[in-house]
Image (cartoon, rainbow, N blue to C red):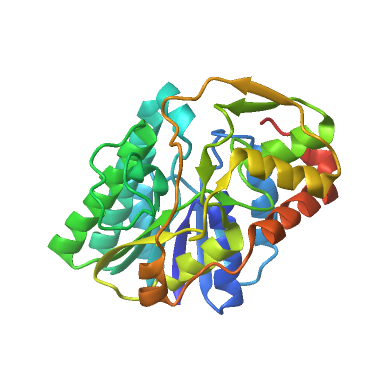
Length: 322
């Protein structure tokens, strides 16, 4: 298949593009390489992709509707995987306009370009942040109408706009809700990479709350497998991609990294952040039934791979802005 993948220099986009090429697909990756976090990390991921024969890169922005249509008219695509977007709860409170522009208007531009060029399959990335306040484990049928951050609100908007285009124009949509993705070359604004670097350097870890808050951590390779599996025809479905096991607390995660690194963490405890969720836990039975997917990488193995990558790349990773 010929696949258009947006956000290819992002954490999940990079791994998904790699997997698609190994599965025999031709991948066009687009990214604007914005400075939402340190561009050096995005450029490192992109350099890995540029070495692949079945990958081509087009520098562009999904917020440019004319460019989206021109790209999709010029090359016949079988599916679009829209992973471009602004991520992160805290920064969405500082710059909500950017989140509305990218996650809202950018997603609309993708859908409009698909409508105009006849592309009928969309995989859209979404978030476990929508489940705030719901009963665990989170199942896709739960009402998620009370988002507690601008980030979650814009992802909810993207989901419902995709449904509208499914209803009106017959676009087949798989919405994949990701649960706390981690692994090598992960986002520097998320806890796993920060914790590894801070513990290794002896820098105090900024820990919001008691540390009892927990996440259903999911390794990036597993997320990439679930994302590519979601390219099949489903009509319109929302599908959780998460660890599916008992969530891991922040305190436990720190202990795991301490073991891998052979060093003790220094903790700088701060008040709990209001827009954060206390716990996340995915019900993944739908992913198993529809996609034949379930995670394969344990938290012990996944965190070890992250630590090994960090130690191997430490010379430049130690300089990126967290």
